Image 1 (cartoon, rainbow, N blue to C red):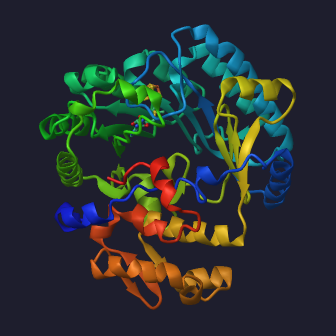
Image 2: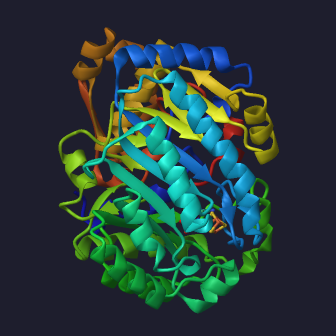
Image 3: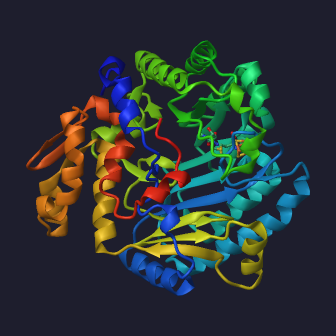
Length: 461
Ligand SMILES: C[S@@+](CC[C@H](N)C(=O)[O-])C[C@H]1O[C@@H](n2cnc3c(N)ncnc32)[C@H](O)[C@@H]1O
Ligand code: SF4
């Protein structure tokens, strides 16, 4: 694992810090087409049933009470809790419809509720949603599945923690973002150390397996000093995993970000200092830098999966369970089944209308061909393990790596000259200095990137 001093070269970072995809899928979502329909999805489900892979389920609950001005998630802001009811009815209907297509005996080894804010719905609604899932899918009842939920610590009662455990969750992912009062005010997002601490006590009492916390750097009013303080407070709270996201300011794509006063955003050189400091401090505090924006304790399953070469990347970021088919339910969610991606309607009215018409609410999708699967494997290896063995790829795909990827390898040469990677006849190893720039390295293998792609993607750092 890199020490922060060895990965730090601001001049190279500036040179290679292009806007780029986060590769939670390959090909990435802009390639999805609305010509993809239910027929292709059904064919993929049949292939997936014949393989009998375990399942991973994702549920999107889009509602939030108030809006955080930085937010780039797919959400619906409403204080009117009754808005959730008609949506939940459709979500439960989608569970029934999806489950009818999949063989009953396929175990659900991974389950995630994301948002929006999944804890927005009432405790009874949470019980109802999980009961419907359990009725139609084979959930594991021995606590061995990885069942996680995103929570907003400023907007939930500590009494909900036992409810989450009772219905089967064993992992929590918490949005912290920043503890500084001025930053919180500038982004309209409030959660205190006391609230998080109280929740952590309850989480430990209830025997959850793991807690992950999200922080963001580059927010308005943040300085190196405020970030240092937030990091200390977070380390003290002792999460098992930490994400430190770069604030992606793209008001042309996310209208709510227009509320942010751009004059309050930290300058790029301050952001670099923040990142350098955070990596050094978190590694010093005992966290392993997994890659991209993720850190984990040495005994965390994410770290172990990386050491064992089993780390994956999916729509939730880095993940431990490979070899699953992911069924994603709810507005805007993206399934990954056999060799297809299928995305549900992004607009809640379109989503609900499709369900009411008795159709799976698929709006867009993509069927991967052999070249896509090959490139996806290469990108996944690089982004998860920072190492690529050409022989392994040649054995799996029956190609000559140096011939097939001659153009990509040529484009990688300057990165090798700059000591970000080492490139030899049969492997690529990402050096410590290249780890922060892994997206730029993966982009060399992306067959779909065009110059105009820049406006769709956030900058890497
Ligand atoms: C769906 S939210 C998490 C759950 C919950 N709604 C909350 O806010 O606590 C997922 C995470 O994405 C990150 N995020 C959202 N907008 C972002 C942006 N513009 N740039 C970087 N990270 C962002 C935040 O760290 C947030 O915790
Ligand atoms: S960050 Fe979370 S709580 Fe805030 S608006 Fe986005 S999804 Fe909602």
